[in-house]
Image (tube, rainbow, N blue to C red; front, top):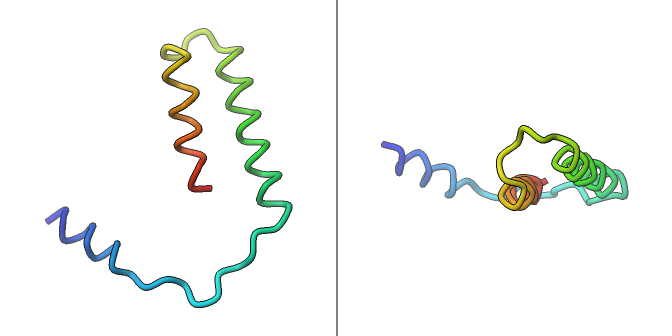
Length: 63
């Protein structure tokens, strides 16, 4: 059942005219990356730092 849902999602056609990336998109991404780095550095109650920082960058990449 899950594979059928994933296949249907993967088979969706692309958007015809996607909007262009502008400087605001990159600024938002930079703010989120900086926020992540500051939070990892300042918070002591997070998981091990070498795992949290790459995980957050992986999560932010699709942005």
